[in-house]
Length: 256
Image 1 (cartoon, one colour):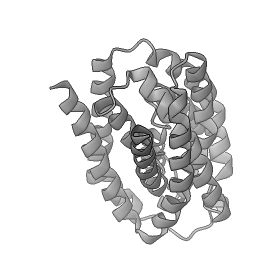
Image 2 (cartoon, rainbow, N blue to C red):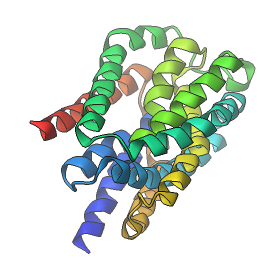
Image 3 (spheres, helix red, strand yellow):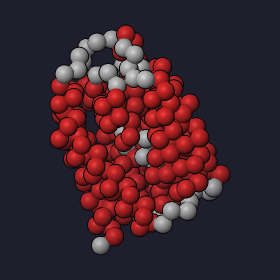
Image 4 (cartoon, one colour):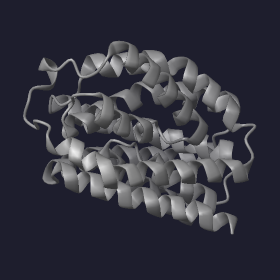
C-alpha cells in the first residue's frame, strides 16, 4: 500500500510538471524508478510509458480545448513515430543499465544547457497570440523525421519524446512557445502507445504499478496544462532546464 501511494505521488508530480512544459513527465519519473526503486532500464521505460500515455491523454485534451495544438504537425510526427517506437522498445531490453543512465543523463544536460544559453532568445521574438492554425509550423518532411526520433527515444528511455520535440520545435518551427508545449503533448499522446504495446509484449510493465501511475497521470495532466498559462515563455524554459539538470544529476549519482 505504501509503495502504491509513493508511486502515485511520484506520478502526480511528474504529470503536473510534464504537462506544464510539454515533456510528458517521464524525465522525472524514470530517474525515480531507476534510483529509488531499482527498476532495470526496460522496466523503467515501459512502466514510465504507462504514466506518459495517461498524462498525455488528459493534458492533450485540455490543450485541444484551448485550441493551442497544431494538429497537422502532431499527426505527421505520429506517423513517423511508429517504426521508431518499435525499435526503441526492443533496444531498451538489450541496453546495459550503466549505458542507459549515462546516455540519458548526457541528453538531459545537453538539452538543459541549450535551453539556458540559446532557446530563450529564439522564443523572445515569437508572436504568442498568433492563431496556431494560420502557421505552417515546420517542414512536413522534417516532422516525419522528427517523429521517428521521438518514437525511438520515447520507447528506449520512457520519456515520451517531449525532450526531443520541445527543443526541435524551438529551433526548426515557427510555433509560439505555448503552442510548442501543446503540440508536443498531442504528439506524445499519439506516439507513446506504440512503445507501450511493445514493452507490454516484452513483459516490461509491472501490472501492480499501472493503477497508481494512471491515476497520477490523469489527475496531474489537466492541472499542469492550466498552470502553464500562468508562466511566461522564458519562465517555462528556465523551469524545464533546472528540472533536466536535477534529473541528470540523480542518474550520475547512482553510478558513483
